[in-house]
Length: 498
Image 1 (cartoon, rainbow, N blue to C red):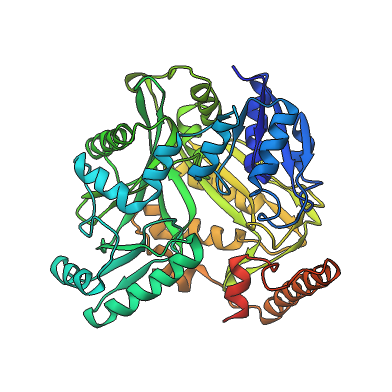
Image 2: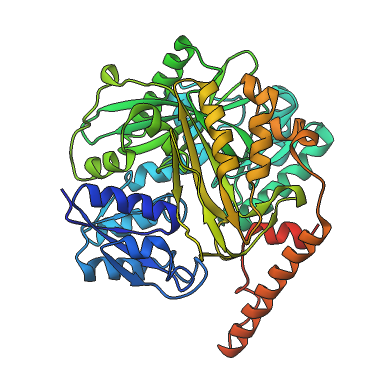
């Protein structure tokens, strides 16, 4: 077993990994940017080293600096968490070449499953159900249009690399197709430095359901059940739950077997997630594979009792899986809410600032994974997620009641949050019934959003502009061009360009 692990990440996921390392008797090493110098994860680690810089490009994406620190401090392995370099095949290779262990899959699996067209072809070859569409990236737009006409509109144009809704266009009419392809390719190129796109049939009334898998180096693969991720905003997950209210035992067995076959097809090792779409007729289709630990992994842990980070570490250390499919037991129901420093009632305006007061929820069945404390700064330089609030109950009804109680109990001051919006979701009859699709937020927007507070939006925008002006001053002092130094937080773009 490893004696020391460096965590190449920040915030709540860094703290989450540090806690497991501590329980396992492993020394943890944190790395941090200037912005994160006073963050809880830095003080919780056995050792901590400064990366310098404010933005992720200046800090957490600096491969050479991170590898230098890892070798200097005697770390034997690197855990990438999620985001940043967790699904970067080149970084995984660099870690291995440096004589360290990458706690995640091999670079070849990351590369194969990270390219959606390559992954689709592999799934088709291994008889995993896929949405009808092109197997390869589009090279001839007119030929692709013929394919779209054949499979029938509506269709989706999607980026071959990346995800999160970037480089994606819904096309409902033939005359919109060519413009959608060109627009999606431009966006994909800007976001992922890869303009490749492909098309697939748009699944109507879809549910987004994913299966957590574990795989070791000895060919053993198990699935740990499913998570329902259909409550989404702009293709970004907002609420997750386990198990899904849609699946029965027969469908769960079929999808679980497909998830295992997916992992075996790419010789996968470590923890991963296979995402599916389920249509209104309960047909399921492979969507993509996330070759890392998921943000929403706590709901899986809450219904099966495993520590997924510990399992990741043990697999990376060369151990065999400690569980078999037949021995896995699931009990109860769990939800996860992502609490963001945003104002949903003002077009999700960002709410940067200092957390002046914080009293998190607690009590029976409640778990919070957070990377902040009172006095922490919510900066524009990173994702605005404050914490992940989870609730467990013996059944779905009790889990909903506990989450509603926890959301109302959660107290935070100094910034706006998504808590009022989340309460409305859990209060909604359609959500409580379990009868919803990925279009839930759009369909019931009138019930979920309050009246906009114009003054709050002006204040948020003023804060953004203040941050930008401050950054400009720093750039001038350092004699650096301003154009590439501003915050990349997407919410800024949404507000400024409304």
